[in-house]
Image (cartoon, rainbow, N blue to C red; front, side, top):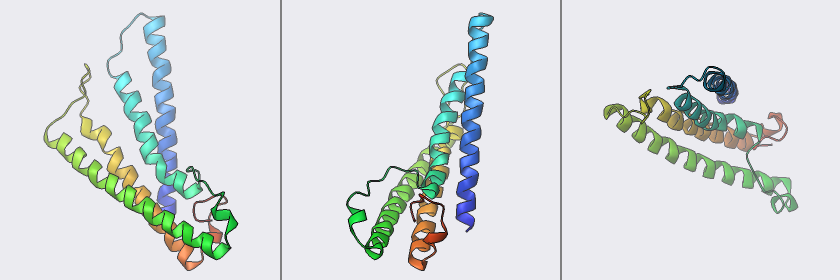
Length: 166
């Protein structure tokens, strides 16, 4: 399914953001303690990168079933009832994800229109960092829909082991 592929791509992007953030932190340490030089843009980029990785990586985690879940009670029921719990859970994830994507879109647009900048010397436009919210949460909502469809059509057995729809 296309959404599953997109979620995997989000996992790659999140991994890249984390790796880039780690490299920038190393560069900061070398500049500050090795050369007694100051840094201007690095802190903002690391913070935005790690927060972005969290939001952009969430659809991939949902696809892989890596979100926190408590199945102690649901495992006591038949497979058919467990599938309905997965559908209810998927609908709830969709509603939360869609709501956060909508709110994130409004915030991103407001930051863009208002020319909001970070409060550091770098003055990075905040809409760039805020865009991770509607992007990540929108794809999280779509992944939840894909998982619900997979469960309802009986395709959830083809999903990765540990997936939210398996």
